[in-house]
Length: 179
Image: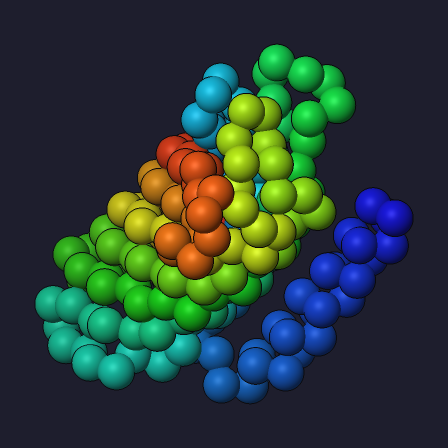
């Protein structure tokens, strides 16, 4: 079942990227490692597409983006307590143009996540379908800002739509490469 889910999510990721690549300004493949609540770890792998800026000047730009990917939450208390899932979220990026090779930015996305379980560690998530919000501070560097390092804070919850809503928060670091 896990292999079938992983294959399905991978196929969906590739299809979405191919469908929107024509209007994307850049595509970034990324990986992240995060610390979660309750002495847990969270890992994710995804694709992010930044679209042409809505507002652009010599000083800054403001652009929309979309991200899709998969994640795994691993409990340090139990070898069998792992949650697998996928996410899809639209968002916004504010980039400062300070130097040709260094581009600091702020990012925010809000979307959905679908997990294989509604419990993790000692947390009652309330549903397998969760809201996912992410805030990031990062820097693009290298030729044309192709490399990206960012700090992330991610919140997963039902948004109060269920009685049990312990949610799950992570904070960590991500690396991405734009092509």
